[in-house]
Length: 121
Image (cartoon, rainbow, N blue to C red):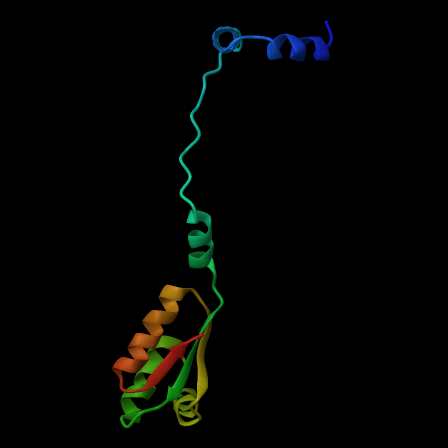
């Protein structure tokens, strides 16, 4: 019996006969039907968006309390005092890059809490 004969025979079966055939195949080869997991539309896109690490945080304005902003920048970047002061004095400037959305928002919030203006791009 060729593969074409098998396919023709299966195509001519009723739903009940096909169900019986599947049951026999499951028993014969010791397998079971596994229902596919439900898929939520866009879930992969959401996960991909969360996994992206291409966010940057920019200091757009240093604000009036530069000392607090310098401390905040030192805290989030681990730069030294001189480098942090230079970054704050040269605003607008890049504070951090290669971040996830959550990390970028956290850094932006810390810098803004010190009195500066920052944005995530």
